[in-house]
Length: 608
Image (cartoon, rainbow, N blue to C red):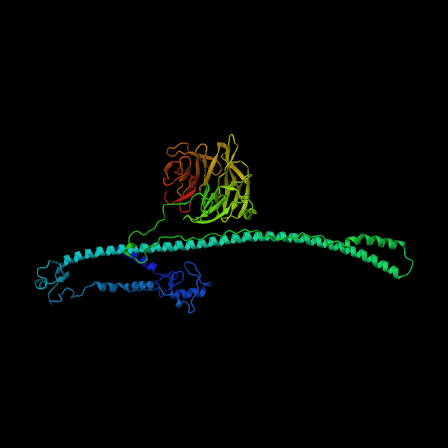
């Protein structure tokens, strides 16, 4: 019990300690962000930090004209700290407090009489004379026995009190966790907004520079044409002026004129007389025509509720106050609006917890957080020039068949338009980085990224009568390194996943199996097989692995999600999934995400 008391005391002491000096608050002051610090600590902080930021959450703040002392006081914290200081008396004081005085066993009403009994009705100690006088007929017991029973009663109350304190300490821990989460979420949201803004500005800047370059090129051509015309005219002027000067000199000499002079002048004047009246060649100038395109918003800031304990400490605040996230979260539905889907064929989660869904029918990628809140969308354009055109037309877009994230958080999307197939590298905001032109097969492709080896692995199925499938391993620059799986004659490889050990997992549509390859392409094992029994599959789709090495497969034909161990042995079904699961993905903290192409939804499972 003493250890428990010390632990609780340490927790309370920690909550009431300044994060700068790590001591109990002295003259606690509150910043606008609601974080509290000692007055002297803040004074030292503001002297060396510019601009002024909260030491905890980095939120900027400004001081009142009278400085730190004019900041609001945290009276509650000051009061609690004062109580702790008052209770921190020395061990000698405690011992002195506990030792009874020599006269403590003497009856106050009958000097010389020893207290030896305890009245159960009046709850007071008695001497023998007290029993004969004021407490005649009352039920009594020995003082020693009464002390033992009272000690048990008090001990029970102490235990209950410790439980209450532990409950409140649990609330304090929850509040601290919530504060940490809020700070992390705020920083992530701010960095995402800033990155989105910078990408938009970069795109607009590149567009502006391209337009200005065209204007400059046209201006240079026109200037060159004008200079050429000027040089030609100056040459003619010089020729005619020289002939006129020569004729004038001959006339002024009053000598005999040569007949050739008049002939030459007639020829020269006749040659240029009609041309002098002509206007200069018309220049083709560059004129800017502003396209009426509404620049899409950077995104949307939404407000989400997080559960907080009762700050007033009412009786309703007792008990277990850990507010775990819901075990199942579902969002989406059919449609073309933000947050809706038309065949969500692919899904991936970045290391920062951003969810990206390839919205096949709507020809776009949509992003969400792990609470299911829509963040952003972008069209899956196939060229850098297609971004602005795609806002008015779908001719520049491809249908995204699958999506995967690389080690930098950028996206690789595989898909096709009416004439070609591509693997395109985008930023999370949709800026096209690179493009790999793929062989035209007419079959859907799937993709995954080996973030350790920096390879892109894409399925490829050729042939219509006897399809032959392989996995193509590309470098980020589009160089084909090798193929995997050709020896097994996979007819229609589906989704791909690669674990930390470099093992490649491929679902196979026709045989309803999962193929497992080594990184060098050597086949390790095959499991599954067509059927509806435990561990059997029917037209398997998406596949992923968790931190334990377990393998999760979307069993489309049986409308199940199946969990296998790392060797391919059946473990269990994920029974909470509805519809027809197509793609699966694993979040950094172990949440399982499943897309459903019947209801066009995404389901996030915290426990499966």
